[in-house]
Image (cartoon, rainbow over all chains, first blue to last red; front, side, top):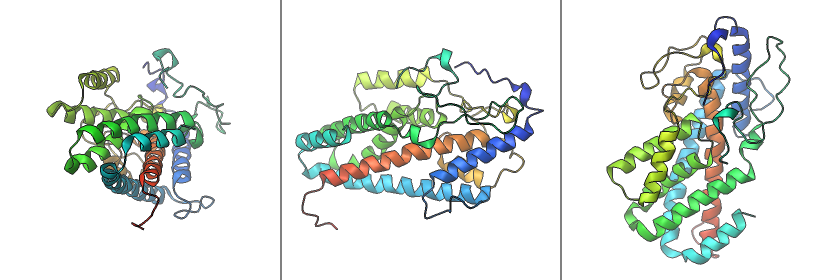
Length: 92
Length: 208
């Protein structure tokens, strides 16, 4: 992994950096659910970061809940036929 | 998606999109990140499903019932990390965490252990891989405390560093980029697990 990006641009590219940060924050904002933020409105960076933290925590909680649910279902379902059905539907 | 050799260091994906028009003319090499839809590609979803389903099959046959929820959760994050780009800092952090926890109690097969070690050793530890904003790349060692706060960086960035894997030692620009990629894959994993729950559920929805 050769890092070609030289560090000589540190001193003279603060302007580019601000634009890049603005682009990255906008990209994060687009990933958030529509109900949280209005995508067309201009939202400060602190708000976008806060909403992103909340969104990630919600997704983490969903992984926990779904793990519990899958654990219960694995104990009762026939894995072979269910797995075939899952593969057929997900890989199409 | 194994094709990224060192000669193609700039291209994170197999199909790099055309760079967006950069308004600043000063050598416009901005962050030519692909649109969010490309990170959610069908091939990436297939990889995710492949890894997670294989893990579920193994858990179903080997893991005792009381330990299954925790094992499934860990398998979810490992599958995410494997389906994503191995050069991402958050994937390396997750796989490294997985390898360390597995080193204490080796439960998987030797083939899997070798595969994990190979992946971890093949990828370099520094979390600042995406130093696309070269002006702000700090020289601080990655394992130590967070870098000094950049001018204009919100205080909430520290909260992001705590919840994004590998974000502890990341500077602001890399943190934003890694967070976007992590959210995309985390959301895809949640959608996959929800699909599995729907399919595994009996046709009579009594739980709702």
